[in-house]
Length: 215
Ligand SMILES: Cc1cc2nc3c(=O)[nH]c(=O)nc-3n(C[C@H](O)[C@H](O)[C@H](O)COP(=O)(O)OP(=O)(O)OC[C@H]3O[C@@H](n4cnc5c(N)ncnc54)[C@H](O)[C@@H]3O)c2cc1C
Ligand code: SF4
Image 1 (spheres, rainbow, N blue to C red):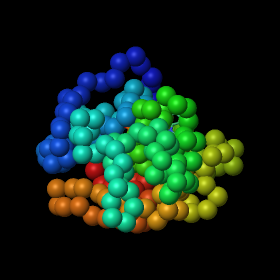
Image 2 (image 1 turned 30 degrees about the horizontal axis):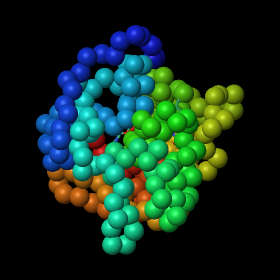
Image 3 (image 1 turned 90 degrees about the vertical axis):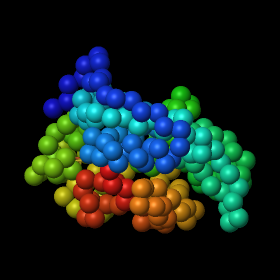
């Protein structure tokens, strides 16, 4: 069960300046490492002590991950680009207005200033039971606390359930699917490109993940 305390458990903080260095650090600390972007989702997990990584790799100093660039067949948005930048960018507003609208609808200005696109599409589900550390299917247990009619499940799914009934909370995810975005995933094995529609996965594919990315 989650216990809210005033201090986050200690971890070693790494602040690489290139994607290559970040990938090496993640490999070196495989199984114990956590990728940090704007921290809005990450710090919730740490403060509640449900996730306790020993190594945190902060992507904030990697300039190649920030900003919106023109490319031959459209635009490329770096994972560390803030939701505010996406919401305000003229190229996004004119060519991909559904994405600008989606970014604009995320929470509050403060959260959009701090939150990144990479973090928004990689955030974990907001199921209250799971976020509080209950040992449900998604957490490796053998039941779903949200599936009972009287449970707290108003925001959960009506389609696509498979043991888990939680949904992906990202507002930008459906917009990226609608504009046929390509998602670039970097790993030490090289980079892979996924259609946004295939990047986000449901519990029938893997109940412990919300995207194709593996830690
Ligand atoms: C009060 C509140 C209200 C919110 N309301 C909304 C809402 O209305 N709509 C909505 O869509 N979201 C909402 N959110 C969620 C918020 O938008 C996300 O938490 C935020 O976008 C996460 O981005 P971040 O940059 O802070 O990422 P972080 O919190 O640092 O990271 C989030 C997750 O993504 C992983 N990650 C981050 N970047 C990468 C990367 N480049 N590659 C691989 N993994 C990565 C991290 O390891 C972590 O698991 C809300 C959050 C809060 C706190
Ligand atoms: S809906 Fe999913 S995340 Fe929530 S309690 Fe059930 S299995 Fe866990």
